[in-house]
Amino acid sequence: MPFRLFSAVLQALLFLLFSPVAVAKQPELTLANVYQKGMPLDDYWVSEKLDGVRAYWTGERFLSRGGHEYRVPAWFTRGFPAHPLDGELWMGRGRFAELSGAVRQVVPDDDDWRRIRFMVFDLPDQKATFDQRLARLRVLIEKVGSPYMALVDQQRASSHENLMLRLDKVVAGGGEGLMLRLGASGYRSGRSNDLLKVKQYQDAEAVVVHHLPGKGKYEGLMGSLLVELEGGRKFRIGSGFSESERASPPKPGTTITFKYYGLTATGLPRFASFLRIRNDEPAW
Image 1 (cartoon, rainbow, N blue to C red):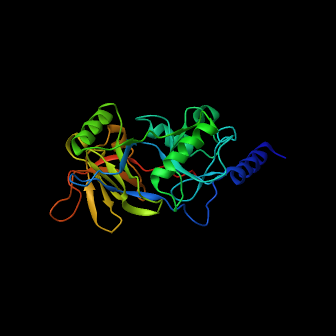
Image 2: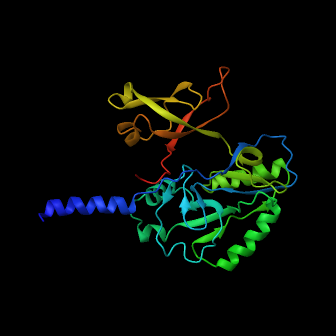
Image 3: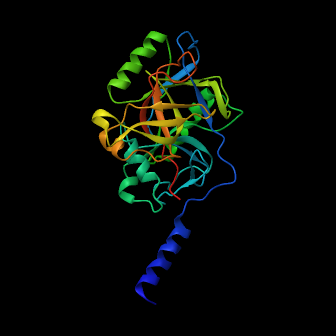
């Protein structure tokens, strides 16, 4: 068999063997609302909001938010429990781009995965409260004893002032923000005040429609992106980009994450600024 033909056949076989598997049903995940000053903090637990990739351990494999399988080295999950866990794959603060590149590979790289941890923050169980689930998780993860699995540190929330002090400390250290989980809540899918994110700014996702040309110092580069929100409304994002991102901007159809500070009188994000491409789904 000619070498070129052999190489093409080998690549096709590798794709079939290692391409991510789309499942029939996406995992039913808990989603967060945004914390607002004045919300009661009684019975909430507070933890750091990790800038990782959401991952749902089914008891056999990791699924993404979109229901695709992350290809993971067999040694990484050795000893993991045979029941679901909810958490994030994480490399550390400020390393999202590096992490997303690693977890989306068709063939996982051992060196990359040795630097990743599965940070567990919940135990899917609709009948138990979060207080009960957290107690069970502490015992479970200690029993597993894997160097690649850890429990996200949870502490009791107190006052708004203390929450803001902790937020400032986390952000100053390179973190994203905080998460609040209601101790009396069950594990239920969708958005609710059972789970709240606490950040110095708000963030959301939008889809790139097309590029708008730059002017002045950005002439010859992308000046801004026209993006579309989930509800269909469009607006421009022109800040937050590096020069290399302006030279090679996200392609139309790409989902991006942006930050903003409240809404305008017309209901659009105020002072929107690009954060990153939301590329946490496994490669096809």
